[in-house]
Length: 128
Image (cartoon, rainbow, N blue to C red; front, side, top):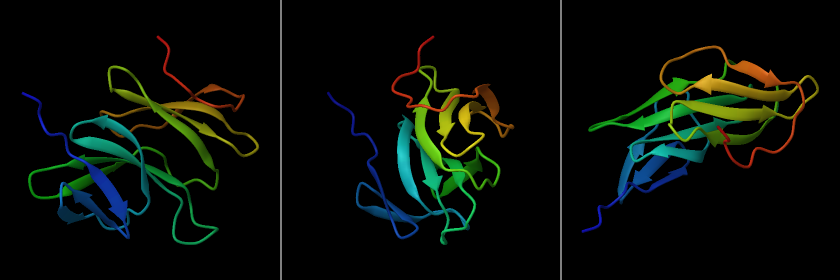
């Protein structure tokens, strides 16, 4: 027997999960960019205005609400690709602006992203 998986679609600050509309936590806007597991996903938030900071959030679907954990401090850089590690404990992302590169951050707790490469590029897959 197959198990139904939550389907998340974001529109105007709310997420529809199998027909149920749930508001995102205050201050979180954007679009899902990667699924982590059956109860959490990443949201990329470019902000409401062109000069707004870029943010990356882990959003978790709870029994009664969504919670968001910030993965990237406010930045004026442009996030390119985002990839979740196979063990779902980390996310890698690229920053496309000058001084960009590839960064890794924890999905388990808030921490400062760690730069692992000064060269930006495209992230296609997580390799061990």
